[in-house]
Each structure stands twice: as C-alpha cells, then as structure tokens.
Length: 281
Image (tube, rainbow, N blue to C red):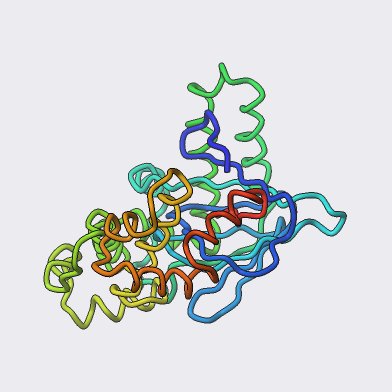
C-alpha cells in the first residue's frame, strides 16, 4: 500500500494471488481495481469485483478478502479513495434533492464502472505525473469524481454517508466510538448514547451494515490492531494482547489463531518473510 501526494488517495499492489482469504480492514472509501480482481466476504456472501466495477464501503469494515492477479499474470493493482463526508455532503448539496429512503441493507456495494467515471479517475491519477498541479487541480478532480459517483447506482448510499443523521450516521458514530476505545470494555449503554439509538435499533442496524455485532466488531478491530503492532515492532505477543484490551494472553492467542490461521509469532514471521503476499485492502 502506497500513500500518494493526492490527499486520501492510495495505491495497492499485490505481487501474486493469495493462497486463501485473509482478514483485512476496509475503510469508508471507494475502491477501483486497475488490474486483477478481488473477493470480499460480508454476511457470508462472496462479492467479487474487477476493473469493470468499483466498490463503495460506507464504514470501517473488518472483512475477509482475497486478491487475484490479472489473467495475463500482471499483478493486482487497486486505487482507494478514502471518503471525506464533509466534501461528499458539499458536492451532494449542489445536486437535485433525492427522496429520502431507508438506510441501505449493507455497508458495502459493488457497481459497474462507466466511461465518464473512468475518465475522471484517470485524470485524477494523471496528476501524479505533475505533482506541482496537485494542490490546484486534485480537489476539482475529486469533486468531479464524487459527483459522478453520486449520479450512479450508489448515489443514495453515498448521500447517507454524508449525513450525520440517520442509521448510517449513527452506526458510523458507534464504529468511531469503538475504534477510539478499542482497548476498553465495550459498554452497550454508552455505545447507544454515542450512536443516538436504542439498544434494539443499534444492534439491528449494526448487524445489517457490518455483518457483525458490536462485540464481534470490537474483537476483530482489536485483532487487526494487534497484528499491526506485532508487525511494526519487537513487542511480545502478551504485551500486545494487553495493549489492545485483552485481559488474558492465552485468550488472545486462541482468538488470533482462529482469525489469522496461525499463532501470533508464526503469523508475523510468515508475513515478514513474504510481505508481498499480504492482502491489500
């Protein structure tokens, strides 16, 4: 994964197809594949997309994914644009109002690419060849890209992302609350207060949008954070377990094994030896 000089725009490259699905964290973003394809699993549903489609993720979602090379052996290449809800709302405000609707049934969606959307994306990417033009031209290209996306089949989902009220707004606040306090015990009452929802509404919408209960979501976020901490330094597995909120190092090791398919030390050693095989998200 490479950060680019264009704000919130990242390029992900996979050296070869992964041997199986790997847990990964999607953010609230749009993902465009330039080469290869990817599969993600949510609600036990398998979604596959390639260069002929784009993916919209409304929330920070811990999922399982697998990348595939292109048919000619070219590596997987993807572009991710992390969404700015304020900018999305600003662009949406310039467009004709849409009839309000209930929140979407899932926090992730895949739709066909269109020629206007592809042209806009390529013009945004072309600015990487002329860095001096990025401050002046990248904001305009991003606004046009969001405009094209708002015109598309997921325009309604994107408008929900831009709104602080509504189900997605509440679940986004709940997700942010969990991520900010990932190493503390989850208190459902406080989570309901942060989301502005009743307990029943919170659980219903949280499960619909993320495929997980709040407690399952926190567990996956903790394990993702633990994996990054182990990769980044020389801390022991037990130190990392307590740092991310586990009270028992043995419980952490068991859940890490179930999540990533290997104990912490072995998993990190394998990742460091073949970092090119790591799933790009």
